[in-house]
Image (cartoon, rainbow, N blue to C red; front, side):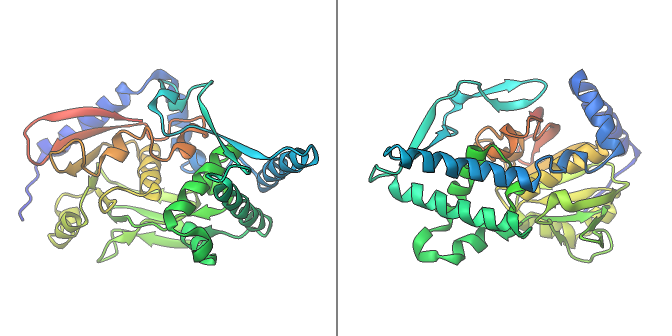
Amino acid sequence: MAFATNQDFFSFVDNHRVFLLNCLPKEHESMMEEASRNATSQFQDTITSSQVLRAIESVIQDIVSSLSRNEPPFFTLNNRSSWGNIEFNESVGLQMISHCTTKKVRSDCPKSAQRFALILKILSMIYKLVQSNMYATKRDIYYTNVQLFGSQHIVDTIIDDISCLLKIPRRSLHILSTSKGCIAGDLCYTEDGTKVNCAGNAMSVLVPSNIQGITNMTSNAKFILIVEKDATFQRLLSDDFCNKVSPCIMITGKGVPDLNTRLLVRKLWDTFHIPIFTLVDADPYVNGHNPFVWTGLVGPKERKLSGKTFFLMLLLYYSNCTHNCQYRICT
């Protein structure tokens, strides 16, 4: 596979960057300036451990109060599966409407009693994690009692429910997800006191599990390339794409990107404000870049609870099977 670039290519990239910045609403200018001064400002937890503990204690207190009145306790959750509960706000992005429909998880209903018990079980585990300042992955939680939970999917959905119930982002609950994405190219950062140089690594670097713990990000990259398929990503690596089309950053989510990969892309945009391109198949309905572009029902607790635009960026979406370029806002 051959690559050829000239000055016109990078002139286009520079002009496109100016275009992207000009397209952002004026309300975001101060936020962007702040992100430039402090690369971690968008990802610092504003919720303390004591606040998380108090939120869990409040939920338990409500259950105890219901039992003291001889009433069956229940959880009330926002219905996140309906697009009717979501609206777009230019200054925030996609968010839940103020009076959204809800659903109840009752302790006295045979259909939901087990789910009620599992929510309590995981709430207890989260309380211990936060109290001891320890972290666990969703996979760790599942393997503590495989027979009880039944499947990893059940654990994942319950953690999402708890996040929305407490109105606290998952990362503040001391629960991490295992990253599957990879990154390569002109990027250096510090993770847990260790310097990571993506350009100096012959292979790609796994996306960190704790994105908010990344500091001291530096790069001279002109653009970021998101590659949908891992096979294509590895082929580009083997053909030395990052050096031949230098400087750039290349990322893959290995199909549908996980939350950490999406968080990293957002952090790169907030830090460097450089164009982000995607290399995907032509089918707009199933290709893996869609979670980057349209995140209406993807990661709802992270986006709608933060009060900030979760994925605010412009992607130049070029399908490798068509000849048309489309500008899309990623919110």
